[in-house]
Length: 396
Image (cartoon, rainbow, N blue to C red; front, side, top):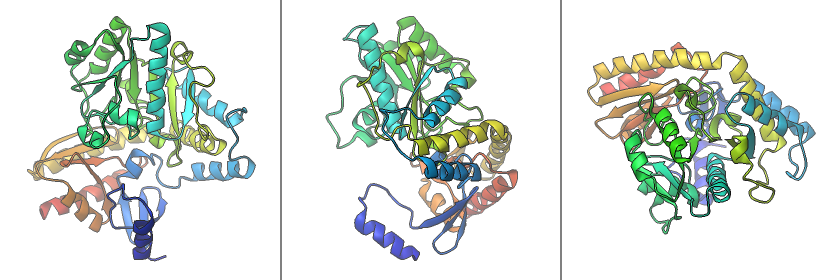
């Protein structure tokens, strides 16, 4: 089907909830995508930090094909081997003792919010239900998660929002502690703010949050939907701080493109959920678990984290040199393969011109270019991307 026909079919039949780029993508392999006209793109969006192993990674494709031949779905009323195996991998490589599987980051965060409230109700009293979240955060688009999100632009038109959320500036432990009330049950935050513009907190910030939570008997929830599964160079970004949260949420890269989410917790907190308290029809289905198992095994066994750190450091160095050449770049920052350039101008025109030249990048917050490529990219890929970006900025 030709590109214009694909776009017309979508525009006619799909709700207008996305500001789509006018290209129709039909194939992906590694860090490359192709549109319906055969044009090739270097992909530094990766489904917005989803395809950490690149598109159609052979290990993931093979695992999905094999599982699809045997069993795709049964109710969670029954046991399945893949679900237990994946849960054991996640608990082995994290702070957590128990896992709840779902289908997306928003669902994982919904589950975390419910678990925090249920735990507080049973252990701290029914008046403890408030969560403190961060300004400029992003936790999803359901009613609870847009309420948790500290950005009014995502909440506009959906009021009244849910009760029980307070917002404080990110990276400000004093403001966090000042916001605690007798009704507070927990704190929810991203280790690195993604949609907020790749905002990396000061060293020691998460440790301060952990200390404040411990002192006030609050739960600490880390949203690793965007940072998790190797994006920052460690399997989970909280590991940089030397602390352990009480609850963590995952999605995006967990299935390398296959829809899946997870909420992890310690035994003490997880015990607050009993049968009937929370559920997901498709959560933890065998097909999703096959994708997750293959993704995790590849990331842990194939030096993906090492490449993320090494190539990410090279990428950051190259962005710093680009900043020296172009005064429209006001700041460069990054951790692992999660990087950004702050601009003095709107970034949309740069994104569009890069697309014309065969490079896909993303702009968040209007003036921040965000780079979240597959973790498998090479220095040559970085050089190619920066050559295009440099040329585009030269013409601005």
